[in-house]
Image 1 (cartoon, helix red, strand yellow):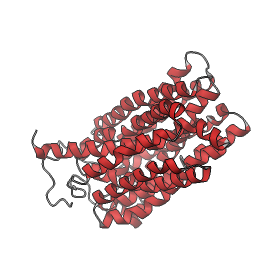
Image 2: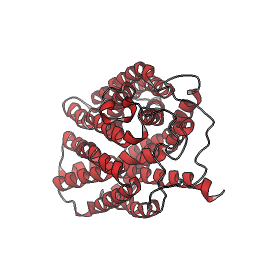
Image 3: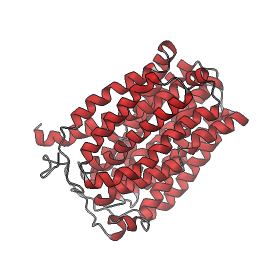
Image 4: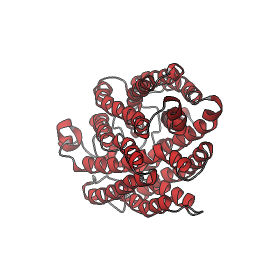
Length: 417
């Protein structure tokens, strides 16, 4: 394979690897929550607030990142952000109180916002529109895989070496990946976009009148409420409410997430691309349908205590994770290239504000007053809301012109370094 053809695939691989590390770092805490809770004598609400605070600072930082990305090299901001959050993760060694851990966690959120806001626009400019669903399927496969690795890493090492040790392992590769990404050429913005940048698609003020953007954002917010709460509390639920050891709970849920997540991420992107020539709003449709199909399996997972429980959790996780790449593809396609970073920043702020920022704390609150089983009713309701919003939003999807464009066949000319 020539270097020209290798470039977009190499860039995708490195950015996906850093995205993987991003989610490993987040989910390690979920795996060791009972150990943290025991050391610092915390309530369920306080433990849930760690994740809510992380995501709160993460979402607030995102809008401040977008003007920088519009003016300066996206690559350089990604590299500096990766070094910043990796260094902070290593500082877990010096956290000896709940408040120190809270501050560390919030600052990591600020660092990770630089990557999550900018990297999707970098990926979108590497490949044509007709392949974006599949490409984002690869890129966002890092979410379930990284989350699962975090569960497994924390569940395996935490009980034997202490809850801080898994964070050291999660931090180290970030420095190496940042160095590798520093040598990538940066692709021209919007080089494969087929639609013109109309006022609705191409200006910040027009974003307020862009229904394609708003419906995908609202659907994503409801889905993220569900996913965020389940990720934080499922290992604890299996351990406390269903009698598994903490190690078993993390291994079981980690295995479910990684297997179902890989298949779901690839299937969702592939199906959205496949339906694109035949259906306007194909990415909305795939996401809406997957959310709807996940609801009954989630209900069975909560109330069944026999052998059917784990298969029901697996199927619910699969359908919940199918929507990741289609929704992010729909988001990127809803706006023009020159406001894409800003649109993603606004999207991140809103879907976290109404999604996984409140859900861990709200679920902890319900668990303290009723039970963890009762707390999981909240994600089930959110899945149904997400499905309804996205089914309605299909009508506003942009009419993309599907072509047989090939992926970037050469290193982008005029790429900035």
